Image (cartoon, rainbow, N blue to C red; front, side, top):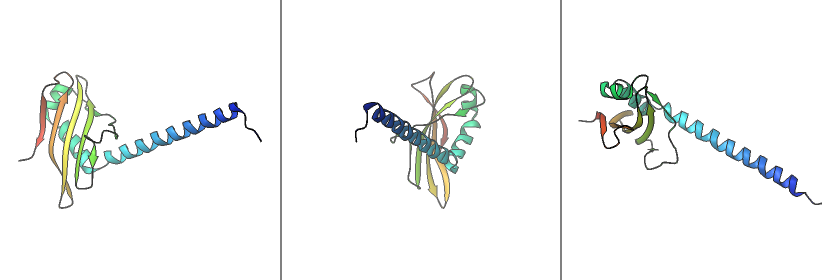
Length: 130
């Protein structure tokens, strides 16, 4: 029994669509899961309540999708976490870098900095642990 080339191309095309859709869905699920962790919520709360960040970005400050494939900046092992989160406001946009540690079953934001697109050589310190 021979299968035509056209039929094989259709099977390959549908297979590609299914695999890529599944990958995109799983990435979305993982990103949403990270967004629900305390360290992520606390870091964004610190950004949104920082007078300097509000001044430079403008309100409302929104977080965008970060790249899971950027393992140098986006990482969590259950005890430490670091993320580079794209953010934007009405005036500017940039990347929000945050570092957190888990101490006594509580996440502590140890450092957070905002790099603005309009000022690429400087960073605004949002959180600096004493």
